[in-house]
Image (cartoon, rainbow, N blue to C red):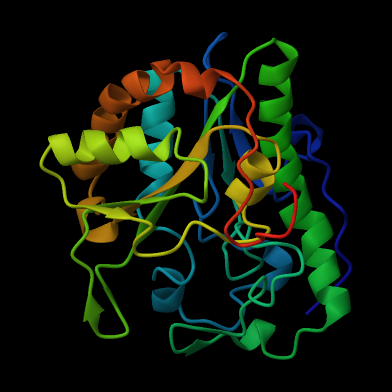
Length: 279
């Protein structure tokens, strides 16, 4: 494996025609406060890394990306006019939704699958991947936020993910989950809206939204911006029609959640993951 990787700039227009871009940006409409992030949109790997030693069926699993999340994000962006940033590299290369010092930033084993290309990874290679892929994507997300703030708008941030119906032999009953930390301004109205639709919604299920260094921690918690992460069960976004239905539902439910006065100000709530740290 060659480690002669170039640091990739965050401006997508700066990439050579055949270069591997670490993210896609959707510009959105002027004045739209909603910003979408899709951390696990793709199972693609840069050519220098081949397939990380994995068979095609492993790269098609949830360990490589969030099935259906990209399609929901792109369709929701089109329906709502929201700008969006989507990571174009597999989470197996490096996880855009983990902090830079998180031990799971590069997984050596994921849901029982050994990742040969990561098995003997050292700090130098992790640093290369961080500079070439993780950091440009994070800067792209921050750039969308900075643009909104520069226009005098307080953006509302929504991360879009998906989760497996069964994990380690345990079935998950939730159709959708809302992950959030201590700031309820977006999560609680959406939870209430899903309940009103008769949808089985997990409140910080199947994961806890308080995670140091993840996308919402960096972009929402540390900046005092309303935000949450949505997880849709993967068997419910397995077809284009299902993705369309979820995007349409979110496009209908989000505007009332964004209209509240509480979402229009910067407010620091701190984090349950760092009770002694000032956000």
